[in-house]
Image 1 (tube, one colour):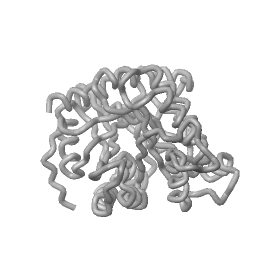
Image 2 (cartoon, helix red, strand yellow):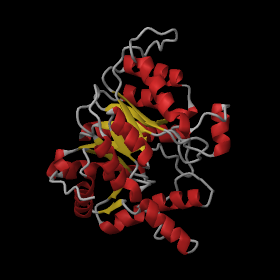
Image 3 (cartoon, one colour):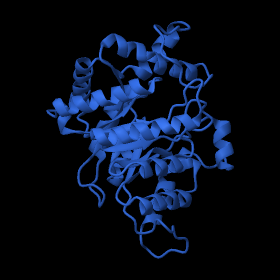
Length: 336
């Protein structure tokens, strides 16, 4: 696909994806303090939205009760949009999600986003513990989505989401393949693609979304956001060193030994060529380097994707280095 965007970085929005990392030697309580700190800085630096992800049974991710953390972040900020990137809808009753996000929108009007995914965000055993019903899976996602959207509508129905009914909460579809891209296009919803861990499918998913897009009450034209891992530092060498925490976290997932985020090291020990290839396929589009390097790589990524927005993930162990990385991205946007 040849999109050949003429957009510059300053022309698009930038947002934050926070996996609320639990650090080795630290606790979830510390993680939430870091989340609030990053959200407050992101608001000050001009980021558009701050999204939290739903994962379960993961020793390195604290945002399992995603709606609760969204409320905490929204209460600790004043203007930045806050939402889910995403809520894994097959894990939940659509009514419960409508009520939770209706509550959030009632508390923080005009600031809440509801991003929805169809993956479990965990392993099969944990998914069963969440759902209690083996029949609830990704195949029912379109029907679950329709039910959820109906709860926000105002048509007469016996079961009503209160709060939730009649509220205008933007719904996004999230995806790492073509399924949600096509569904988002057909329904005329904004679409966010997980380029930060599925880079090889990015361009075809965006093409599918744009080619199937039907204008709707929500959106007149396609609106595509792409996730990107960014680890920025004052020098390329320092950024490469910081990126070892992200690499080790991903390797631990491959090895089925999920663990808290580990400190940066000078190098990462790989168990053979298969791990090298796995790292490259999943993290190959990560943007790592000095401000100049990051600006060049982000502009190249924008040229390829023609994205309307980038949502930045930064798995960095040292909190001050993590803040600095997001600050560099905000400076690049303003200067580009």
